[in-house]
Image 1 (cartoon, each protein chain N blue to C red):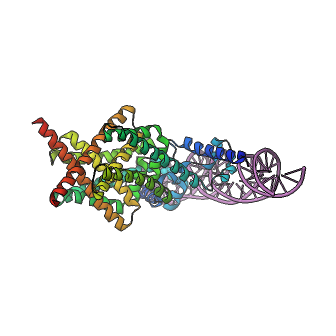
Image 2 (image 1 turned 90 degrees about the vertical axis):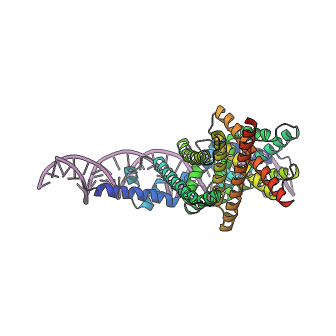
Image 3 (image 1 turned 180 degrees about the vertical axis):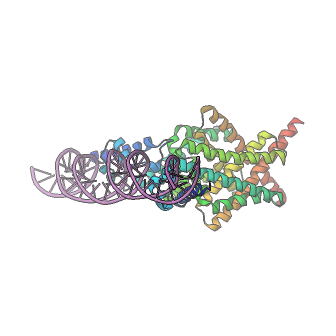
Length: 207
Length: 207
DNA sequence: GAATTGCGTGAACACCCGTTCACTGACATA
DNA sequence: TATGTCAGTGAACGGGTGTTCACGCAATTC
């Protein structure tokens, strides 16, 4: 009953996932990922692949899940920074950009498959992003007392801006990233200000 | 000197481009586009491909150019709608969404290659999007008297939001698109309001 | 009318791909 | 200790890929 066998299996499964990650780069995306190359890098025979995944697609979806997991850790991290005071916007956007810089491969994967050629992939990524938005909506409603509708609009806009900036960061130099960070922070603040203005004008009308 | 020969060549060149376009769909992207399939659809021998393009990459860049051209036509169209009065934001976003709906393949191509695996492609798409932003900046500065820096921030944010919404529209049903249109319009207005608030508070400080 | 240019061609080459199959041998079970 | 399970294997099949080459033949040039 000692899981020696199971442990070994899990180990090569991780090796496959890691190998796939390694092959993902700016020049080589998921679409052009080959079973043979992945198994070669993982150090096993091509045929052994099927002991762990039915398809390359199943491997891909696993990768997306890994990305989603990383994103959620990012969220938690961001929350912690918020709780300990300071500029909420700056802390959040900075954390996000740091994530992009240090998880380039995985963020690129999410980004590509968001508008990729597999519906299932698109939906999986979309789910992760929505999770992100929902978290932000919750914050805006409970902490900032925004009405749900407006919070939804605002959060959605901010997420679109930040993810889009993250995409640009992938190709950017360090100084460009710095610039991009400041730009994004300013833009998020503009959105926040606009939402605030919208709220007060609506409240004024109501009262 | 009659260009019968040249005309025929241009014709099959167009056939190749069109064939490539036809093969682009939600399930089948540029990355998995094969020379042989394209020539098959175009009705010529695989080898003839090289009479028109050096690589598949050259064909791809041509497709991106076509997309850029279409985007600029969209811009011009949008300008016309603005000149004849009505809500600027609504007209612009609506036009954009209509473009996405009727040029699905080409917009999807631009979107995918924006974060795709060829640096040259990414830069080409980025150039097109920047052209888009520049046009908007110009409008904000000359027509709305925004200071250049703020106009840049605002335009960039709006373009990010609108393109991101366009991406979501690709997978959406008609009613979802309607909803998305309204959401996007509201978001653009929030950004405009935020920028306005930012401007006036800055001006107040200065005076 | 003769010479040249150049688009389109079919055969062929070398390569990589995903997937199947029967098999081995270490671990797990009883 | 005997039996069964199952991750990993190497050979093989069928198929698609990009690219080369020499060639035919109609449009063009002189």
